[in-house]
Length: 165
View (cartoon, helix red, strand yellow):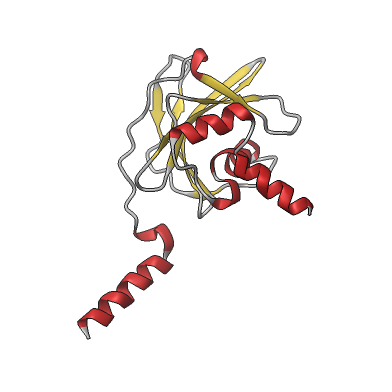
């Protein structure tokens, strides 16, 4: 009887997804430097050009992909350190970059669904094309950097081609 209770508890935990996975503590990365930024295409006309800092990208044991995103426009720039959970299509902002090159941590940020464009343009693009193609997370930093450098994850291209058939 004890064994069946254990199996049931494991099944319930598995069905609940990542709700039982404890999130690793988040350590803020160094502030992004221009030479470490990789531009990614959002595929739409925008006032901003979007970049990920290659040195901030990480894939945690907790399943969270963490990265710094930089949005640049002629008159403004935004810097954010974020996390992304692929299975749930969620993101979380850990900190905002300040003009003096420091971070301002977000005290009580929670996980939120990545919104559709235009509000969630860069987040949804990173989710679909680079970090979570098909809902599956990148397995390593190298895979994420490769996807950014080649203009998307190979899995994103396979999914797109499959939809065209």
